[in-house]
Image (tube, protein in one colour):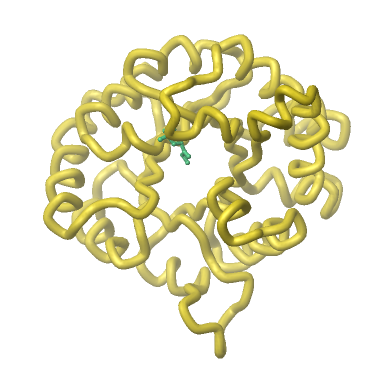
Length: 250
Ligand code: 13P
């Protein structure tokens, strides 16, 4: 059995005030979450606050990106070792917003995946197709290519040290969730592709769904056999909504 996992991706949202309130709210309600492992991925500057508030709680914290480099003259970047220094357990890699706005290639994403592991972080590896690609009938081609960038680094063992998040770009922040069947189809495709390389990794790797997941649709999505949790954007910004999704895994 794979333990469900719900991770919040706050993206570039929040103030010190709102983050305090959000973290207090999550801490106050986390006792109701029986099954899911829970994490929040905060903007870099809020990570020390997350550490201070969540230390000793069952909620883990992480970053939303990291540099492919260990250290040096890379203005504006943050190394995995720095995230590790502040107690991060996770880091999101290859989010569609990074791929789109920062032109991150599959190769760079694969290198960041390895940089995360090297720093002792667990990568949350995002893949997903755009609306145009879905309508063009190339969802599996696109998702397969993105997945292979990490899957083909070796026999699948490297991929197996991370978590996969399937995030159809057309469902992110649009209120247009993939139906449980649409999501399950792609999740099954992903798991089968991993199985083609490494059965043990396919069996144990968690594949999260992300894209307009809310308390009202989370249980239905997570009931699908290959959907092991969620990566939550908008609904992770209010403790009640986020906890509602986390308890949907109960
Ligand atoms: P929304 O939940 O706001 O659609 O965002 C999903 C996402 O991109 C999480 O990484």
